[in-house]
Length: 278
Image (cartoon, rainbow, N blue to C red; front, side, top):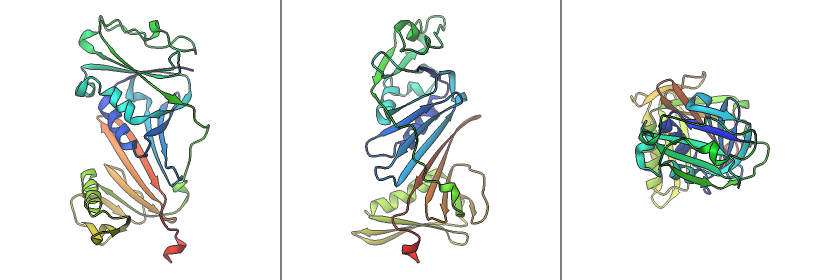
């Protein structure tokens, strides 16, 4: 099985990779299908999942035979930034290809002013490993990184967040949420609870730290709070927090670049069950 993908919007792709990098070991399952790419991370105790769906139109070239493997996401980010921040502009051509002869993922960067005549293979040979002729782009200089991959199981962990009734939802500016988390993190809290209230807004309460109980609050009237609901689903504009009847927390990130849109969903299990809280 082989893939050959050239990024059309590296900035959106990189932001999605950073968002999904939530596991301690940095490994994620990567699934290539004929319509999209899925990046999936699972917590070591199956208490968390992070799933990113990258649509096919995020790539300028997309030739794929459906396959899946595990990949170290921080290493992929480093490989894409080997030429510096130019990968986030139109000055660098970024290609992902798999597998090489030793079942590794090839990350190929070519400065666009080095590409001779804009030539490209634009695909792969059959369904076997990629050859050097498959990977050549006609340019005089390029940077290639080979990333180790691992075999993965056939199914992904699903915490079934959508199967329980939605109790509350709030959409906020992403920077506001980061500031809230930074305040609680600075207090070295061992546990954090989140309360979404249509009258009060969003409250993060940290406990178990050396400074006692800490509370970070975004009022319901704040401009940073874009929408707040306890009954109906609202459109996502930046970052959405949802809590269902099982006290699971869902965090939906939306990455946008003009007409391109990428969603990253993180689902976290509660530290205590619903019955412990009654």
